[in-house]
Image (tube, rainbow, N blue to C red):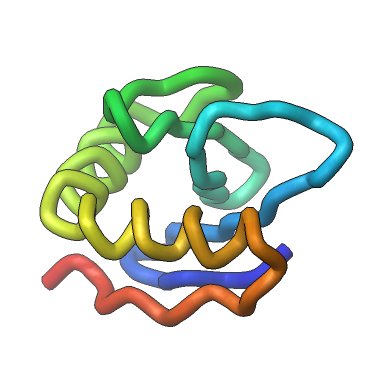
Length: 88
């Protein structure tokens, strides 16, 4: 799964499976935790993260909403995704 970003021990990834019809989303991993977040609207759609990491991911996603949407559009047509700056 292509990696978009890493910060505070969190890894953000995104991929698109042609045979499924998922809403635009990305995956966040932190240690043994995994979660999927919808992009528009920004919401937790599966899995879990500790509350602090969830808030960091949500803040990052709000700041980079346009880049996430652009990466999703690239992924659904089979193009590679672009790196997104970490939360600072």
